[in-house]
Image (cartoon, rainbow, N blue to C red; front, top):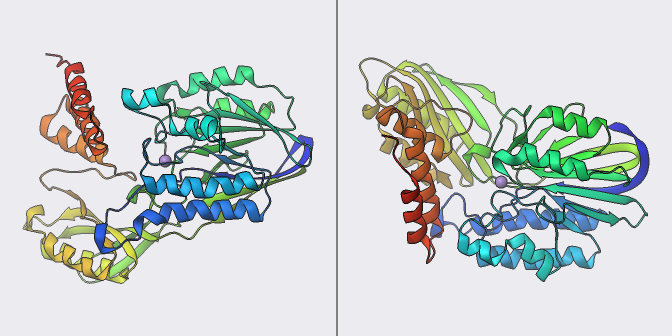
Length: 425
Ligand SMILES: [Mn+2]
């Protein structure tokens, strides 16, 4: 809670990273639960907006997972967004890293948020490139300005400075809707702006509330009105909480359990007071199970990991085992019976291939909080190739992403990526 100089009454929802159309993890035919999961979370937010009779909804980007979303995502969007429109609730959104068209072919067709805005009138898209500010008047007569800043990579800070020049204090309540991180966040992902800039915007009352998206874990500033709700559902193990254990060869001990919350903010402004309440949405049961070993033999590692998985086993559990620590000199990484560990998958909804970060093993992966494929690839290539690993990993990732959303132009685009790379020697 905090107080402001201006006074008005309004209520809105702040949501982000709904990733409609994602299929994670790829369980496939065994369980047909994946595709509706993200759509259901989105519907929960729409239900809440209507029930709470909010004045508007702001979405901080990554409405869809792919800029050319599957029909399931379109189906859900065309089912839910008109409900908001009928209830007279504007849906204001900025462009996330996943909403942006990537290939030249897609760019020529316009981004999905633009189509939802100008063709269907279901959203109001705001970003630095057009509609920098969406102005609206609530039923109670309050004037609201929403300044949008989508994902702009390295240009994020520059663009925010440009956007700031457009800001005026004419509205009763102003929101900065941004897809990106702030430098003080514990996990910084992608486009980032400095805390100094944010402080300037808030203390000089250019904006009253900063609505963030992009980082899938919930975060809020202790004193200032900066909020990041995180994704509405788990989109990868990087969003998932970690339960840490230690295993000494006999006993498995729980050391730490991260809290996990996914949802949205219901923000109520009463006079000068802003109250942002986090509302959780039920999610699937997703966890990383980390087991630490010290001088363990390969069979002890398998035993410890199996015990840890069994403790968390259920038919709805989606689990990734993470193995950390050191091996005894008599064992090597190759001796760990991974098939034995993976055989537990029958007891779970999904068991990910174990992530191994054991010191002394052949290729050492320094595991950090985030474990996306680019990072792993980078570390692997660095260990194998040394210099030049980063560029190689970068090109490999671009090709992987390109082929994942294969189109008629994929081969051409792949060739241009490879052509564009000139070895330094
Ligand atoms: Mn996202």
